[in-house]
Length: 420
Image 1 (tube, rainbow, N blue to C red):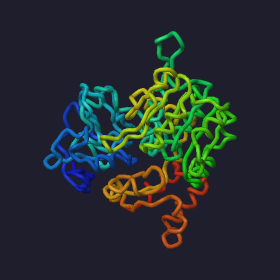
Image 2: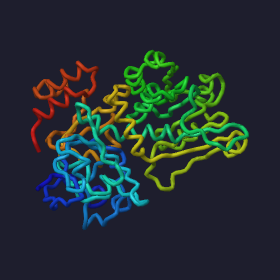
Image 3: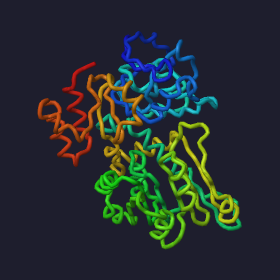
Image 4: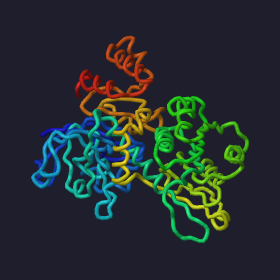
């Protein structure tokens, strides 16, 4: 059968094409993709092309389908998997396969598997590694967001702490302690705030910084200090832009002490060095943001590594258990990642959006792969709606949902947006 998909051929060479999928093998699954969320990692793939570590082919000869945060419906199940997967079932995929110690992943490594496509063939290793996950919610977009949510969950689990005289690492953030999220009101930072407040293993004090008042105001409206207080967390938002000594100021908020856990959400040298300066005794710094500069570095106080037991971790994606946790918490309404979505579009918008993602403000760009829609910000629906009833209706729906994307909005797009 034919599919329409965005494939990468080289640096910033992404093309929307229609082509024939090969015949389905007994150990494969045919799936219909419904939604995909464009990740900054796909932008990095566009920037690096064949040099990206997850690319396994010469892209000029074997272009791959981009997109790895996707959700859809199983269309046909190969004989090998007939007893495990059902046609018509919704699915999400954990792209970090960890298959035979490779970095292979949907959206980076496969000619016929990626999120920015109408139909795909899922290879056997996805099922063998238990990375094809059942998704039971009444929408698709949260299934697409489950992968980025799992990245945050994995980062929280990767933190560790010790006790004097012991070499045992206690995994996870320090419960009932202090946590700082630096540059923490982007889409992934918002997810981290949500998880820090609503998961059972939470801090008692959470300080979130940025240098943009509008972004901080939006974050506080979505996850308020009052909401956090109801869950036993003191939540403080801080604009550090005009503060002469941000380390002293932020430690002052924490009673003059350093923080038990610090997350850095921007690959910016001063932000990373501020994170180092904020660490308290046995403090753990999580460098969450993935840089594109392979020589990126920053100063780190090794005196404090030796005498104050400071340590650093970094994670690149979550594992399957993290994704299962994200799906479960969304299904139980403990997490609501809808606030991550600030733009929607159709598959026709993928190439340009992926290439220019670092220049487009806002949070997650959600793509409906069977639709032909220009990338459009949710907060511009009302203005566009003055001349286009389609966006006028979307504006009404989003206004009823606190300005957020929702199942109702998704259903309207799936039923009324033009097909590609």
